[in-house]
Image 1 (cartoon, rainbow, N blue to C red):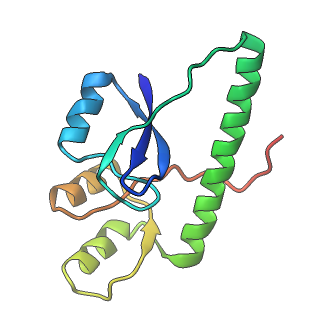
Image 2 (tube, rainbow, N blue to C red; image 1 turned 90 degrees about the horizontal axis):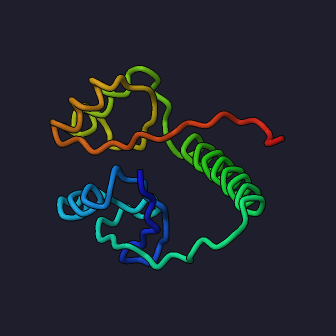
Length: 139
């Protein structure tokens, strides 16, 4: 796996993980990478700082980065829960109804199996799979 610092057309910076550099290039060419903040698909590699540190400071930096990532995911979860309707395991069904205009357009979240998510993607229904981190305090 390889990690790249990425930036969208609106200057939002985020990190992306890829199998290898060729995988990144293919996903960029197919416009499969989008900004998690604004959804822009105009994404490029951002400059990254060289990683020059001792193993001790590296371990502390990784722990801090992991803590920040968990907190960001918790904040994102709170935002989704406060602005979207939870539809539980009816997610695929509700997403289709919204996509085909059978019900009002609105933000929803819930659970879908891998097969349901793949089927929605094949139908051209845009969804995002989000790591759903539990609301617990860091130690």
